[in-house]
Length: 181
Image 1 (cartoon, rainbow, N blue to C red):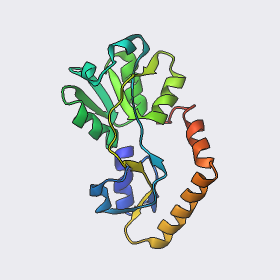
Image 2 (image 1 turned 30 degrees about the horizontal axis):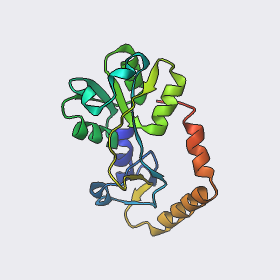
Image 3 (image 1 turned 90 degrees about the vertical axis):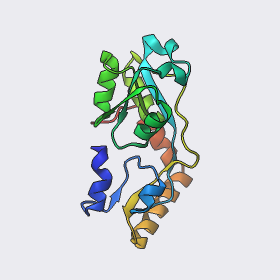
């Protein structure tokens, strides 16, 4: 599960972690990070038949909003939807099932991932509003501190993929599919 990704890296079970990891000041105390490969975008999934009810963040007052445990989106939800009940779940597939069944009213997640779920579920849509992402909140590859050789190699690959447009194609292709939980 996502909430174990960084602890696995810290325990030496992996050399890098590349799982939509946001660079934060707190995480920088423990890990080194590559150059950013993606600037975060946020989205909120709601049931299509209720989309008109969610035209502002205030509309989520008193509602249950699911987010994946251990993610930046979980923190954003708790911070910005203070009058909502944030339900932290381990798997996004579980969150999607819960919004479809009415157990929660919405799911907050990364926009490309949200677009993938919406593309595969005709009864879901993106709310017309989203949470504000902190300026500079970017996704990067995490690694143990001090491995400069690995960091240099990872940065070289990121630069190449961004410069030649391959990364943009990855994002476009990924939004067509839902994540496997």
